[in-house]
Length: 213
Image (cartoon, rainbow, N blue to C red; front, top):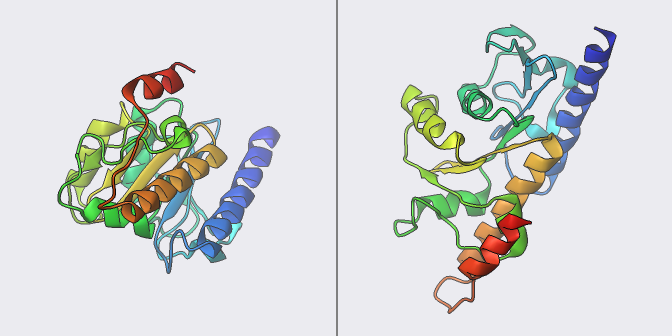
């Protein structure tokens, strides 16, 4: 029990610290975005509803049982199901980050992207940290159909892009999820900057080599 309490304390502090970093660099704004961590007993810590990631109080984070029942902390975000979908589908997921990051959202609104893989492999780090990025069709925030749509993709992809909404990214650790969602946002920014210009993305062979590594 003591070890679990120590793990939970560290996770609470890390969520607040990474939330502040994400917010201070303009990767989300207002009360948008949410972060969660799965503890070793399967329980979840999650940023609550209407919380600014730049002003999180570790003691007020929402806590859920392994079965998804809210048992402690402030009222949970209505997007908690996005996190649970990832955890249910991915046994390796230790954390999930969902943002409304500007460039990723902009790409999610474009009419002519490939819904099976939204962004091209512009850099090696994008391939290694994100990989294939499917576009999840639009549903209103909190809609149960969005949970079903995310669940359909989560088993095959640790990162998805919600149409007209933003990215949801899982990682083995919170730091890994943070780096992946930041790589996704930076690649979306590059993609928009290069719009209309001829580009030289990585070839299929180069992508395959990265994945083998």
